[in-house]
Length: 479
Image (cartoon, rainbow, N blue to C red):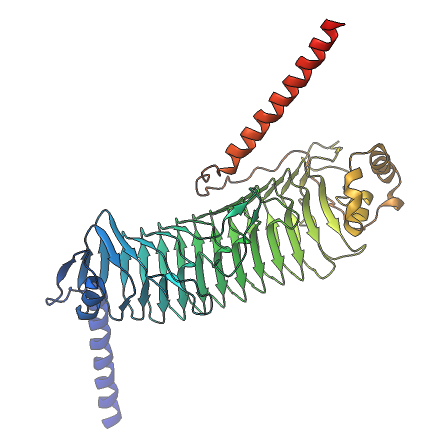
């Protein structure tokens, strides 16, 4: 009897607690009655004093004008700028230093952080805490843009970040101690980086030991190394971003279980440039991406069991470079169009597959036979040419890629299968390009100023050529 009563009492208590929790979740949380809104004038020390004196839940309105940086925010509050509000650092340390949770930074211009990479001098530094949100912030002249360490559920959205890495000759970037990363996350969980524009940093976004991060709708261009760089990250999502005109588009290293879909990796060119680099990355899904006009579209080393489907790989030097350290990867339903070398390998035998057992890829170099009109070629296609295999071993041979000897070698290996350098084939190549969902990436970045230099150079060459032709004409007329 006593046990029965105790059990009934426990059930009633549990029901009461459950009902209370449901009501607390259903009803909006009331704002504290003591929360205040304070307008901060652009006076020396006013911003730091206001942040120190504010109570939890307060809103600080940063008035138009230039405010001294170096402020520390250690409790939940909102820092919102009026139009024309600028927070300027002293040239030492971070401009804003956040150590609390539930902090919002909105509608501010931030500039002039310190220059020390060891202390990670940033426009905004987030140390610990959770649910910090940075929205509609514009940064210039900063070593790091937004840096976070051991932060939970950080959100950076609709921000414009410009660093100090300057282009040299339109291709190479100055890489010295005065350069940092646009968004730099270390040991962070469940962060979101959305709809932001990031340029002129070493890496536009750098993630180390970051788990469950979503990177969506961003434009990352003209960064000195990678548009995005990950190290030891798990279960991250890259969706609808645009990586363009970086030294290399995106480098994913020692990171697994990724979802990479509907991104643009375009115009990343140079002697060491990749659209998408995968180093020791496994069990990822890469779909509906566009990889266009890169030196190497996809580079894979030590990466296993990845699925790449419905991607467009077009007008690149190398479509895919796949090392023998890779195994179990599957490529199906992709369009390989007009690449100098569709696939380059350093192995003859491999269990990497270029079809899924029913459907392969479209290869613009292939001359398919489809007698049964099912959309799949009746003849398997080898995407690795003998010349591509040799060029992988001896890169200087690439200068002969369009020579008559290379063309003759290509014809010979199609006629004599024994000449094929690799056993890898697409058993079900597509006769027509595969249909795919178009990506919805961020907008195209502004044209870099070097284009004006190129235009002037082109005009100069035309002027020299015209002068030479005029000279020849005058000389002939005199004779």
